[in-house]
Image (cartoon, rainbow, N blue to C red; front, side, top):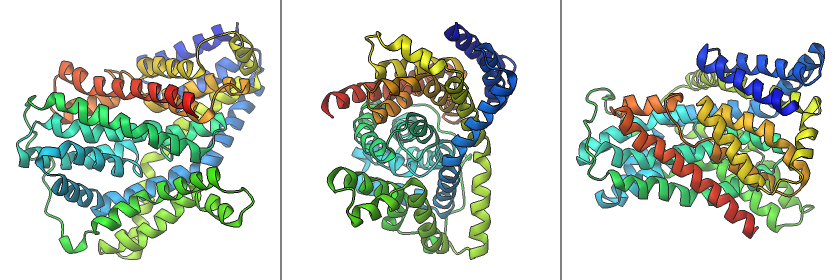
Length: 438
């Protein structure tokens, strides 16, 4: 009976979001309330669970998401992304431009939310395609694939960071495993798959992203741009290594763990960025602070959607539905990683949004952690990978890619959709391989 109620709830969620265009946060709250009542909770108990889920989810994530948005905003406004791209493409040369693009996307994508990073790299793609006379997809696929991989696999991006909290995973190990998984994934989905478009010429949009040439004296250096963008990864990665190699009681390891906390690492990155790339741009301190406030505004709805996912998860926990799911799964031979990927993939295909799909799937799959037979860190990555699969016409990312790259729907399916699906499948395969090794 509880599974039937959940199935009906997800079906209603689909109808509300896709059919009636209801805001995803409102739809998640309504469905959470309905599912709670449907599995036997009183309306008051359902509401209490929703409030608890929203509070506990945002309590740990609000600082991370806010600071992450500020860091991304500083990198975008300072011209650091352009500096990184120009230096890498110059170093790799025309013959290896795909490698330069995928590395640019990876560095830029780590500190910046996907939608911001996507719009940030478009001028780079169009300018590079225009200057080199290469097909726009051949230039664009590598950098866009890297953005998708960082968005789906790596903290401190919203979906993986939220799932880490849901599963009780170690965020440092999740980042470490995610980086190991991301490297072969971007090579296959970005460089190898991107080469299939070597002779696929489509018109390059004209005059859309033409901007005045930036003042070179106000641009940060390449080294400073890369260092600032990667500060959170460096601090969190160092903490992960310390956790694996040093005694827990050692003072130096405790210091590493403190600096490697996502909140502290992002705070350090923002402070460094303010006094390096921020001041380099010629802005006054007051203007920089104003821009930090502006950069947080676009993520308000993302935070609410994540909170809605937390509400749904808490309803399943407080109603006892999670325990019911654990009981059903005891005798199922399917790998929890495969199951998590499948649930997330089905929700992605149905709902369109990777973030909503990942968070909703995590709420359903969370009970599997109680069985103790799976690494929660790998479960985070498998869920994130599943949430990227088969993006199509109900995903805003599909239409962004189609319109900006001036493609037909069929061309978008053959490029964007296939790229996202390759990332998803390689991600699952990598999780299964890591499970056999660690």
